[in-house]
Image (cartoon, rainbow, N blue to C red; front, side):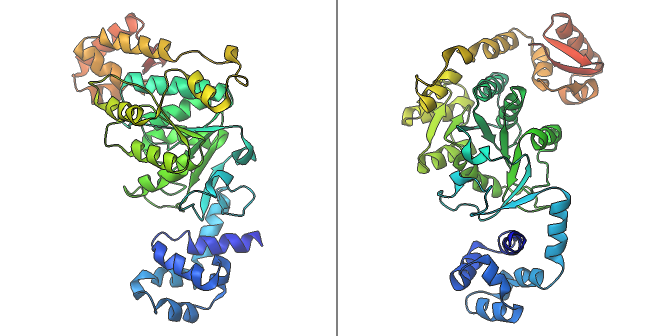
Length: 380
């Protein structure tokens, strides 16, 4: 029975070349994806032709009448990718009541019952090209929330998303990454190692089947899933017109709390978060602020939670401010993940000798270090 349901949903909802209008029409006409799939191709074509042009539904009919579904289903099974849908025991309950809930989810990694019964989940979102201070602060918040047992949800994008996942994993926590592309597509490629770590220790979800490329319009759509899986959304930094603010709006529509980190008034990446605070988002300066809001003071064990995220992040920001222009260029190319010297030279565009001299000087002052010969990271 489960295989039948999976195949039917894979046929109808896993086909993103077909518009939602066609899918909704078939559900209204036949009741369920399973019942629609039981109809013959001539019957379906006759019914759909009443409302749509052939180009709008032809791939749906072609995929029903070939071995395509068997091939895709086999590839999913080979990769241990599960198909979840409303009514499935592992489908996230938090998504069942959101507007436009995903009718199909592809899942890889560790699916556990805690996806439905976990104490609390917090989504963390923000700018892809955030500065050092914001990325480090995000990582600290994610790490401390995970230490307290909070599940961290984000989108596996570069910048803030990646730091949220990394901070959670550093604390041994459980993190969920929601993709805006196919479940087997690693985007951006720079997160390939992080993708593997989350698959091993957390969960990766997507409503897009195998090989679906990362198209721009798909990322705002996945934001409803990110906010839907959470009990609150933390926006760590964002410009005033940012996709992160879409997630915040969706969270409010879903009745979730929105948290925002305050930022410098002249910083473009603080405009969005400061604006959210003006509109009523909860201003947070410590991970404890979020835990107090979620749990209340009685439940919160103050001694087990870091009081502030300012220490390490502010130290990093202060250190950066004391660097020369060339040193800052090199420093900003690094982070907590090792970067090879050849990549630093190529991206810094300062010339080989200048870049090598800067790396030597920064390492001498213990600003950066080499965990492996030829690879550089920040010294924290």
